[in-house]
Structure formats: C-alpha cells, structure tokens
Length: 473
Image (cartoon, rainbow, N blue to C red; front, side, top):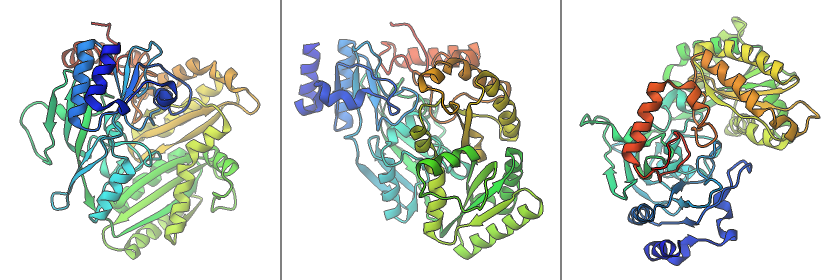
C-alpha cells in the first residue's frame, strides 16, 4: 500500500496522511471506549476536491473508506474494523461556514463544522439553528446528517433530515454531487438528498449542506414537573400541546433513577423538590411574543395539570441560570451513567401513545432477564424516542453484566418490535446493530436497501460492515 499512501500524500499533503499509531489512535477508538479498530491511515482532506481525490484513489486501489466527523457516535459507525485494510476519512478540516442567508432562513456549512459553531453562526445573524444534543460541542454537521440526528428540539423543529434543504456529496466513484439548493419546494425527480441523510457514509461522503434557520424566539422558559407514571407524562404532553401549540419545543421524560445518578456523581446539580418522585418531565416553551406571555402559558398549564392530578409538583425557572440548571439535570444523565459504570444502551422509538405500556411491560421483562437491573430511562417523549438504558444491579461487576447484553438486547428489541417501534431512533445502526436489523425489517425492505447500496457503491468500499451487510464485490 505504499504507492497508495504516497498518492494520498500528493493529494492532501504529507501532514494530513497520518500513519503513526500515536497520531491515528484518536480516530480508531469509539466514543464509549469499548472498541478499537485498525486502519492503514487517517486521511484529513481540507476541501471537497481533496475528498473527491482521495475517494478516487481508494476506488483505484480498492481501499475501504470509513468517513468520520467528530467520532461521537454510539453504534460503531465511525470507526474501522480490526482488519486494518481501510482508511479513516476525517472531515474535521472541512469546517467553513460558507454562507448565511437570513432572508431565505438558510445557512450553508461544511461537514466538519461543529454543531455548536453552526448554532453560534446562526445566532450572529439573529437566527436559530435548532438542532441540539448533548455532544453539540464536539459532534459535526456531517455526522449529524449521516445519522439523521434528533436531539431535544425534534418535537417542534424535526430531526436533521427535516432541517436540511440541500447537500454536497462525494459519491463512491469520487464524483461531486453539488445540490446545495436552499429550496423548500423542488419536485424534480428522486430525492437524492434523503438517500444520503441517515446512510452513515455507506453510500457517499457528505461534504456540505444547506440547513434551515428559524427566527430567534423572544423568550425561552423552562419548567420541571414531578409525577408518578409515564402514563401521566403522556397526559401532560397532550395537555401541553393543546394549551401551548407550537410554542412547546421541549418535552423530556426522566426516571427517578436518572436523576439519582446525576445527584450522586454531580452533587452540585440539585433537584428543586423536597422529595423523590418516580418520574420527571422537563418542558420548554419558545415564545415569539414575550417572556411574560410564555410564563403565563406555563403557569396556566401547570395549574391545570395540578388540578387534574397529572403532576405532583412543578417549578418554573425564574431566570436563565435556573433554566440552565434544570437542563443540566437532563444533559448530565449520560455522563452520570458512564461514571456509574458500564451499561447497556438502547436508542429506541415507539408510537407516542404506547410509550407508557412499553415501559411497564419491558421493565418487567428486563427484570426477569436480569433481576435487580436498574432502569435508566429518559428521552424525548414528545417524539416517541427513549434512551432505554439498563445498568447492572449494585455490586455486580461490569463484565458479568455485559455478558448478558445479547440476551437483554433481544428482550428489549423484541418488545420494541411488538409495539410497532424501531430499534434505532437517532443513533443509527453502525456495526453494532447490523445483525439485529435483519430480524426486525421485512425481507422486502432489506432487499431494497441492498439494491441501493449495490447501485451506489458497487465496489463495497464505503463504510463496509455498517448499516446493511453485503458480501465483498
């Protein structure tokens, strides 16, 4: 492969073809530190043309390509396998904001842009880019689009797919599809954009995107409600949507175990209630009128919920600092669970109307499979997405518990399927769920996916072993 690597150096510069183990290590290990792959090199192109040149070289030398953004994924989608014949194609140097169009409410950005930087660029133009998730300080737009990321604003604004109007993509042949059109209406044939969004780099490499912007809200007000059951949380959601309409931009469910772990590992984050409750809901209103109007909406909503016995207690943030403190409770859950030890994660979705039944039934099934397991259930109740995570019972070693991961996964995924849900809501499939998906998608769906993969990536070089399995060409 020396000729291949030398050609890569000629294409992007010697400094951006990393082969030393000390330089490539960060590109080979997944975000959770559970898996480390091998690669010929980590390649760091600085432009779309350089990406295209590298992809053409990979096609010429038959070298598999693993596109990578911020490497914050949770399903082994952005790291290579252990064979060692692939290259990691890092998009981090493609980090320019190409254009902001406030009148068209669009922003054109490169794939390596950090999500938080895109949010700040929108804010500088007095606009809002609403995609928001815990990893926004390190995840990239290319990764967000390749996994069709969700986050906390999906209830109002939709996921990454809904926020994208146009793409620039380097195909598996090394051609550049430039479709950076900021159009809300464009019915000119097949929607190629949507093929690449959510494909996790298995069909091509996203290099830039046109994203939707929105008017900055005049006020954002946050509240935390304490209640007894997920069924009451669903009733509260229905009431909040009826009272607040599109102003309701966040509705996050958190079990008591979630916040107990947060308090244990981050004691500075305190619950505003004097006693524990079984469930909590974090609500946010983004109001186009005023903070007083948003607060009035919240006060009426909470009063009605208390009168109807839907909530046991509630607090409305009275300042930006209090609002941030409430959000820190939600955003610290994953880190607190990591500090507690290894856990078995499930990023699932079920119809919103069936969430309470799903939790009740599946909690019982998990307890039968792993007595004493602690359920760390939280997520975006407003769009049906739960992070249905399972931590070991106190005193059980991580290794002993993880040995039961396959059995617990099957219990959870079978239950998801029974409720008409999906085993991946916003994290993608990667390599971690490539076998599971064959059990839960129909034969027709799988065959259509394989047909698309074979047509767009006939050499089977684009992120092999991820999303859909195909034999080598």
